[in-house]
Image (tube, rainbow, N blue to C red; front, side, top):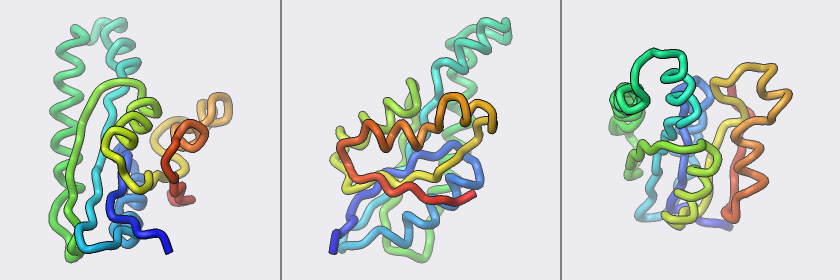
Length: 147
């Protein structure tokens, strides 16, 4: 049986990612089990918002980071499980950063929900972040059909 001591759980603050985190808490095993919650601020979004003159890209990125820090802290509240929960907020392309962090942190697996916050048409045309992670990852990926 595979022991899952360290799991990376990408979160976009959707119900799907909340469910994925809850499932990861159940999957994490071992004496030093840990879950790393990762939120990636999509630089394409901050560029688009800056292009729409909603502020400078730096200001928008700072506001998005503050929001993400608040949201991810709510996920990481202590649970009744003996699992260490860490959080990371970074900027970049979501699927690329998920892959990079998983390799950098040498996690045992990535736990991700099938669909997040993107629209249905966009998913049909371009695929989901989860699908891209599965295709590119050198680490095991557990994709959950939640949400």
